[in-house]
Amino acid sequence: SQTIHQWPATLVQPVGSPLSLECTVEGTSNPNLYWYRQAAGRGLQLLFYSVGIGQISSEVPQNLSASRPQDRQFILSSKKLLLSDSGFYLCAWRVPGFSGNTIYFGEGSWLTVV
Amino acid sequence: KQEVTQIPAALSVPEGENLVLNCSFTDSAIYNLQWFRQDPGKGLTSLLLIQSSQREQTSGRLNASLDKSSGRSTLYIAASQPGDSATYLCAVRPGGGSQGNLIFGKGTKLSVKP
Image (tube, rainbow over all chains, first blue to last red; front, side):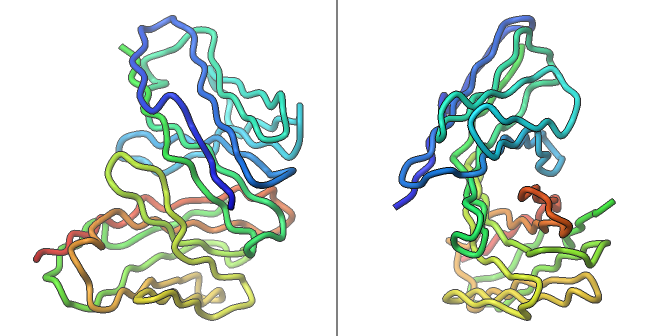
């Protein structure tokens, strides 16, 4: 069966510090991978998606970047965090044609920038 | 630009009641629509996915319908239980070859009282 793991689950970081959130998917190959952010009182916003190793598409300009060094690994990074980067970050995966193209989400990572 | 709206934002019902959650979207050119459940501080759990060619999907006590032409979907929960308390999110995948970028509503927070 397929599983998705995100870590760390919670993170408190000072303004200006770097960030690295990691996501891995098990039990599938060649997934599309996604990073979403859920800010308080707002809907989920797609930040990045990737259809393959080294292929990253950015949906919104921001202080963050993403990388996909391996097929089932997706990393969200920042060199210098801003207060506005606080939120709940969710990784997700989808395999085109699998399960009706359902998108599956991880458990999320809470980031508080102080 | 596709926009997804969920009404009501919050709903409180007594245990055992049947209930309907509403979702509307502005552009009927969608590939599919997905309903999710989110428990406080947790990731999203996929409940049902309806393809654009389908009218409804059922899973246990849940039934989701889709009227693409009018831009509406409903999630029907039969015989509600306190364990159904969560935020329910509706998301559409736009048509036109997108890579699975879901557009989310802000959710309906459901509370089922024992």
